[in-house]
Length: 223
Ligand SMILES: O=C(CO)[C@H](O)[C@H](O)COP(=O)(O)O
Ligand SMILES: [Fe+2]
Image 1 (cartoon, protein in one colour):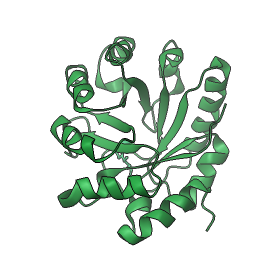
Image 2 (cartoon, protein in one colour):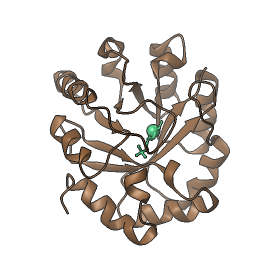
Image 3 (tube, rainbow, N blue to C red):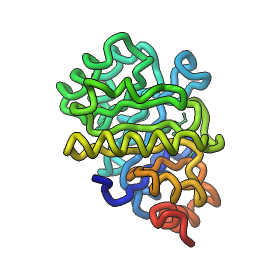
Image 4 (spheres, rainbow, N blue to C red):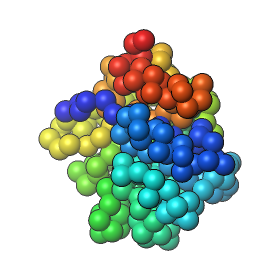
């Protein structure tokens, strides 16, 4: 069943020179999850942050760290991110040879497990693992960068995954990541999403705008 909408600001669009304060600011104005984009310059054409930064940010908030791993091979880094303070670890099926094993490893570490579908990744990757997931993440841009445009074809993928999740009878977050703004947020919610990642749309306008930005996204884009 679709849960109340939660907002996961992506700190990819935060001030990297002031990340601790940025995390405290978005926590204070209602961020539900803190979305951390981890990129290796190999699986995706960009490099961001590693477990040391997650560990450094951990004391700045009690909100869950929603860690989106865009690294390959991913398995050897799961323990480090878990130890650093991640709460949700989400992996791309293309980032390792044994998705089921990777999901089980995350669960054995005591963390919530997510699977991420790139725009061209078919739904069938969820067969045989969906019951073991806490979260399914639909990429509505190709991973690697913030500030890209929402890919409309992902709306029907969100609708199809909503049906799959509801058929499990379990509570599994359906998160959408990429190009979420005041126009696309209500469309993603109408398609069945219940967690919205937003980097550009959260941090646009500077700290004084964060509260209103998050409130508008949560409200489905209404002013
Ligand atoms: O995973 C990501 C990119 O790979 C980011 O989470 C995503 O792009 C968020 O940025 P924006 O809201 O600016 O599109
Ligand atoms: Fe992300």
